[in-house]
Figure 1: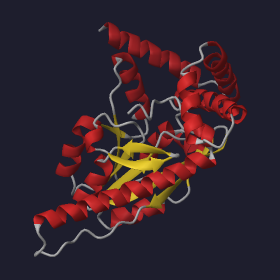
Figure 2 (figure 1 turned 135 degrees about the vertical axis):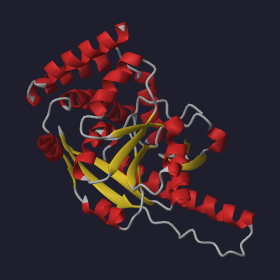
Figure 3 (figure 1 turned 180 degrees about the vertical axis):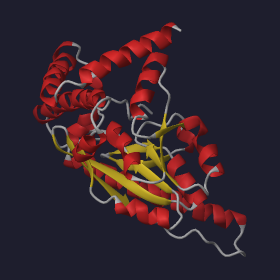
Figure 4 (figure 1 turned 90 degrees about the vertical axis):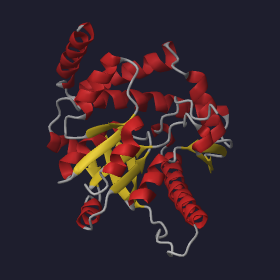
Length: 301
């Protein structure tokens, strides 16, 4: 009961703050960025280390501005999450503009599920506006937060425009059992996998990096269309979103194929999907380095 009351109070407070104009909110964001950067020094060592390993040709004096830029962007993202509590959908769609929305409509008309792969880049939280563009269900896979209060707050924010939340622990079973009900499933797949023995490793940002295989496996198992969701920051408070098709070889082995051969083909398709995804994500990060989540312990394994 206490947690429910606290969650409701925090949401009420956040909603009041969300009615402030963007220029006021960004003033608050700049102050928060200063605190994170210069006072709290939030994960400073992790951020510097991640940037240095990812851009080995840069000197420290070139890495430092990127780290400072990250703090500013990081604070902006949370400010924009608060703003999304009250901003009208029409205004948010103007600020988080999808360049080619018809691509998903085409897949939907062809009776295909859609697996969307993206990363913690630009403002991934504003993907919550996507369901307002389409006549089909949109799900985002997520890992529930440890704090029940924070979990309740973020759930209310993320569901505002119709996004359905799918816990990662239940995702595979849900998608396989509903493969005939066409929908978009969004995987934010650039976190460090907990079980590296079932992950695939690729050269990513100049270092071996493991990636979740779930999205690729489910795409292959359900014959889903696969797209990379490219999110780019145009300017403060404005983002460009583009769906990039990830084409794969057709998984239709002859009936005479042995089971082991079928497994090999399945594995190759998963690798093909993940390799394309990692290449596209890396290109977006290199184009706008400060806009990725450098504070995450991505290479802890």
